[in-house]
Amino acid sequence: MKRPSQKVFVLLAGVLIMLSAGCNEQGLSDTRRSRIIANENRQLSKEIESKKKLLAKCLEEKQVMKKKLETDMWSIADPFIDENVILRQENKKLKAEIEQLKAGSTAPE
Image 1 (cartoon, rainbow, N blue to C red):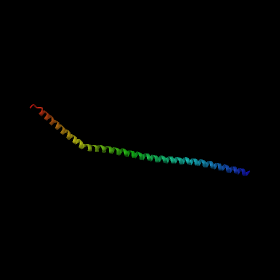
Image 2 (tube, rainbow, N blue to C red):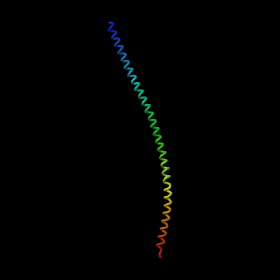
Image 3 (cartoon, rainbow, N blue to C red):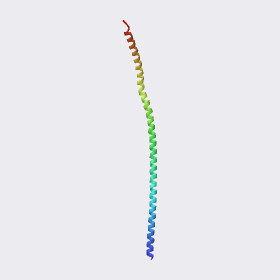
Image 4 (cartoon, rainbow, N blue to C red):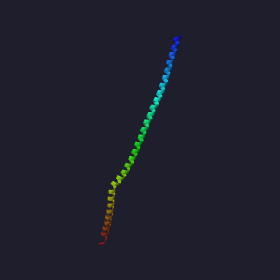
């Protein structure tokens, strides 16, 4: 009788070892999975922060370029504005001369 009880004990011990190993393995895989997810979350958080910084930098550069464009636009337009003022004054003088000539030529002879 000793023989069958030893077999049962060995089988029972083997089953218990397998079950406990299976539970530990599952626990390790959950822990490992949690660590992987936590690591991915950290990496994604870092990536989000870097993208936010990049966006802020781009928006700042956009504002600088917008101000520079406005300044450049006025510096380009200034000579034309000055020339336009001069041409308007000349135009007024010429119109006045034309009116004087018309007034002089319509006088009775």
